[in-house]
Length: 234
Ligand code: SF4
Image (cartoon, rainbow, N blue to C red; front, side, top):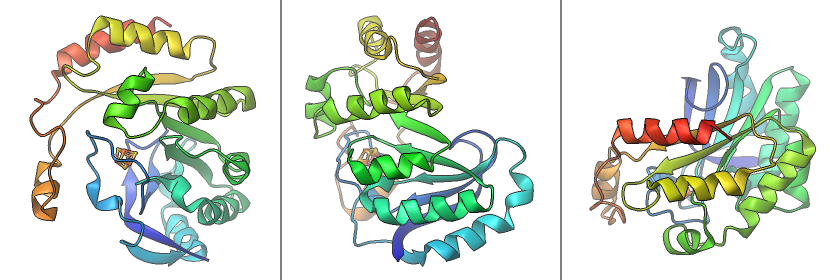
């Protein structure tokens, strides 16, 4: 089986615990207004790799992974190619490589559950705290990501919830209170708030596409840190 891959990063430090080999998979069913990887949207783009080829690449960097590092499947949305992701993670687990899934949690079915059985760590983007904001700025309901989060919590898979903070959209105290309420009672290792940035503007320009949040300023890091302090209190 072959998977469509947008790009590969050999020594990533932002995509899960420790140092990781990051596979940015091609294809995403969502259209987040804040998306910084528009080049990954088209499932027919990217380059084909077999799971064995990915494994062989990962093994070259094994000595850098230390105790916490390993492979991360990111995107795009890795769950667009769940069967391929299962094959990659199975092979990695056989070699003792730690596996991390970076996902929006927008697809949840039996194949995804099978993938999660081979997942050591999950980074789940809960993009907003309300269904209204999901419908408006993501293009789907909040229902499936929440179901996904509930399953992670019940299964005891270590989970980091991430959210991009976008000025005027989800940066008020009440937005963070709503997020806190949503996450209450869930087993979460960490909540990570990330500042909205606009370095992807040139990608949109080169693709001749409009950046939906192009008129919104980048997030103030101080404000994001304040909100991070508030959310850390859960
Ligand atoms: S889920 Fe990720 S890749 Fe897909 S549109 Fe949203 S931000 Fe972009």
